[in-house]
Image 1 (cartoon, rainbow, N blue to C red):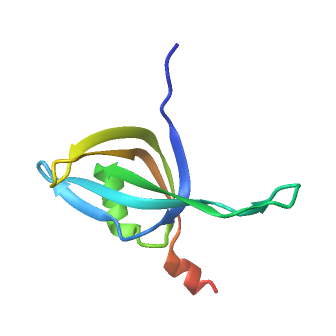
Image 2: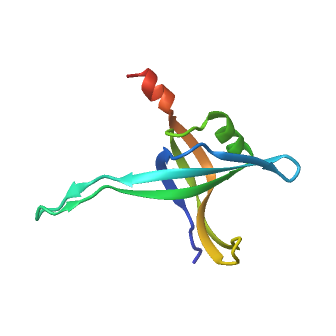
Length: 119
């Protein structure tokens, strides 16, 4: 039986995307995406607070070029991709681990500017 590694996220961009060009002009972008579960109250009255999860999203080529042109802090975007983990050694020689979402699809839902213009 085959396995599946699929992620779907809808959230807000936390800071301006980091866009670079590598290896013969290939565009790569990194986006910090926040997804938030709303606060709620259990039947017994216990309040569960809002919880925000931060995701590191990596986009390549045309998707990265779209991010460079159109995505900014506060924008809502939809991402489909896969989870990928890696390790690296920091400046102090300590091994660090990171989990990233490698995007296969991107949809732009709204921009902060559009929200302001429509109010």
